[in-house]
Amino acid sequence: MKLLRMTFHVAWLALRRNKLRSILTMLGIVIGVGAVITMVSIGQGADAAVQQQIMSLGTNLLMVVPGATTAGGARSGWGGVSTLNVGDAEAIKRECPAVSDATYFKRQVVQVIYGTQNWSTVAQGSDLSFPNVRQWPVASGSFFTQRDSDTANRVAVLGQTVVDQLFGPGQDPVGAVIRIKEVPFTVVGVLQAKGQTTWGQDQDDVIVMPFTTAERRVVGAQFLGTVDMIFASAESSSEMDEATDQIRGLLHERHRVAPNQEDDFTIRSLNEMAQASQSASQVMTTLLLSVASISLLVGGIGIMNILLVSVTERTREIGIRMAVGAKSRHILLQFLVEAIVLSMMGGLAGVAMGIAGARATSSIAGWPTLLSPTAVVGSFLFSGAVGVFFGFYPARKASRLDPITALRYE
Image 1 (spheres, rainbow, N blue to C red):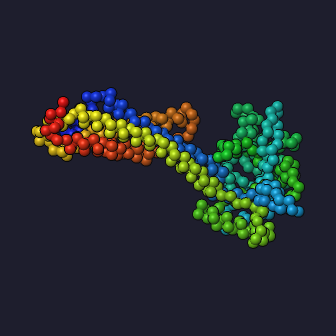
Image 2: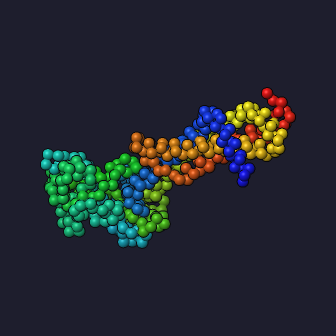
Image 3: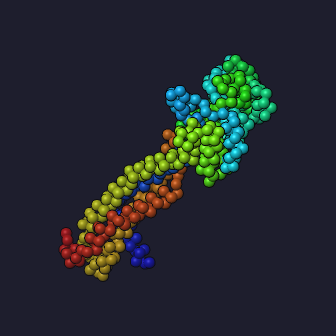
């Protein structure tokens, strides 16, 4: 222990003799560690933001959308013809045990007017299960009722973006009468703000109304009861695949899809979207991490180069130490400790630089960042490993000097 303490003391004195050279030597390690921490923080922050946006659509959510159809020899792509209806959604609720609830909607872009203000938004007709499946509670007022749906009442629930565009600050929209396609609607509630989806769509730019009202008074329909999409919520994430199979089997039966016939619907899972997004984020983080790690290697090469110069400059000192009893392992330990001290000091400075860089990126550029303790500790320990790896050769060279030759060195 005493030998190790003395070795660290001598190494510290040796590094202090050439402060500027030591600082410049550490610079590569500082930049490398700082870049690694900053890049990982940006990558993990972006991944967390994407996952949060996906989860804002709903938990364990399955989307059933109309698929490709062929009629009279003419082939129509996704959404060309609505092949889903209200009966399909109700059947999914009743006959799919792995599905906890389901909702459906029909939507259209409309112009909404309140007083002297107007705004182009999406009018969406849905049912009472909408807030539950989408996990979208009402911030003020209430959602429409079953009576409103049965009687096609002209009531609406507004998204936060629509409220911001039509009403002044502090103005309560609940109870106000707005006009959608010249039809008066009474606002009964305001949905909580959800923000944008991963593809940049503003979820709050919407007006939700009873499906029957939308179908008869706003959106219209060539065939009553057709829907644009069905959302189904699985009981748990582990039952997503089972729920998908149950929905597919049920719709095959209801739509009379033959075994060798292409489905006229498509089932999409938000978990698949989340996994794809996570994979893309991991690839990007790995690429950024690889680029940042090059700075650590450059810093390691710089340490080895400076230590080789130091061995040459201190050849006579090494000879004197060997002449008074120092063994080869002591010399090896001496220069190895110097390399480790250089790299670890650079690592500490790099950690501070990386944390500051991540926070600066978040505040200046507005990018989401998530500081990773694993990246901080890992990059610091890796800087020490770089010191050991690149410092071993100069230390070994110093320990193998011949004492007599070293004493004669000028």
